[in-house]
Image (tube, rainbow, N blue to C red; front, side):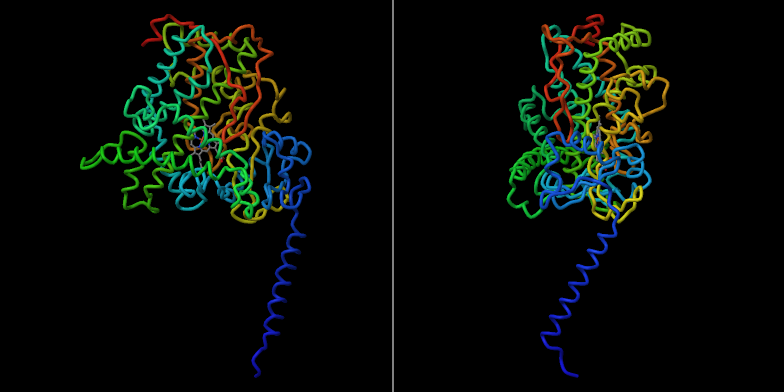
Length: 510
Ligand code: HEM
């Protein structure tokens, strides 16, 4: 038989190419995609997303419905904005959506996706979650650190007494406490202590580094949506990600070295903090997937980042909402006086006896979820939701900010009204899809039990210990309640307040 000529090869190639293109075209035509705005070439729908993406997306979902499809550059993004859709994505099809998209932030700031938050679904991430459940956030470990949370809370209350009747920026004080609590629990000490002359970083430097990390993990980096523009780094974010990561790495290297030094040669060393636990796990030859040094650093960074900002942001919103509604202060005070009395502080275990305080915390998280669209997920296979096709690798957002304001779920949804939770069993543990500040399902926040403890007990003691007032002649109507978007969603203008002590003075110095 005669050998095929180059012409017959070329023909065969061409025919295959045409078949591939045709089959893709036919497949796409057959797909029933969720409704959404028509995308522009190259940018998709990015032109519709403003500086507060969750609010832009909220407005679009009012037009296109509880499941809609957008395009961020070349990528399809499906948004769920109702209780039913949250349930579909996070419960019914949780396993399908248990992965994360690969973003520049994950690559450059978390050791190439080696942390918990940005790692892809797979054995590494599953093992990480097992470590969280069994070791890092076990009830026993969290209880063993209660004294740290109490000590730091007392230090805050004492500090507030000392600055009583002067105007303070509440969030600064709250962030310092969260940072101290998380540093002591995760790193074993306050690495960023003002009084420590040998500290590797000053508290200001550390806070700057954290803020930068948070901001860069929340930004809409053009290269994540339009990959062929990635190398240009048009917004300069990648340069900043590399810089902050380098700084964090220097800090984490120092922390790990100190911990290893302490453990060296000690038989049956007992872990004192979460870094110790991680280093012990890294030494474990029986782990399914080896935890390397960069993995320990990435997990440590996740724990510091996850634990520091979120509770401070929630508490600042709570006090702001209460300043707008003084009658809520009054009711909270009545409950605290009745259950606790004016001769002592509130302990963590007593929150069960303070349903109104618990309701204020829930109402704050309903209207001001720290992560308003949760952390993006990514479909691992083709799936059908509500009759629509969601192809593999689609990015998925669940807009809990919209769900928290859904008039079909909440009566007078825009009103801050803790009473709506009294006598109801709605909780934030990921089982009640109308209230998901910590997400739900396999990717739900692993630190939620710590987060909720810190929020509830801080709120209770801040309300028990002080009367809160706006400075000068400022009226409650003047209080700005705008947000800024990042990985968390704090107030745009930080709250300035006056705190007047309510309890006998000797209690503040105990
Ligand atoms: C007020 C406190 C907190 C809030 C509101 C919060 C909220 C969230 C949310 C919404 C998610 C995404 C869930 C999803 O994708 O469905 C998340 C994930 C995560 N959170 Fe939190 N969080 C808080 C505290 C903490 C604390 C104290 C830690 C650790 C010390 C932490 C560590 C993490 C980690 C590691 C993830 C990623 C989980 C994964 O991808 O598997 N968070 N958090």
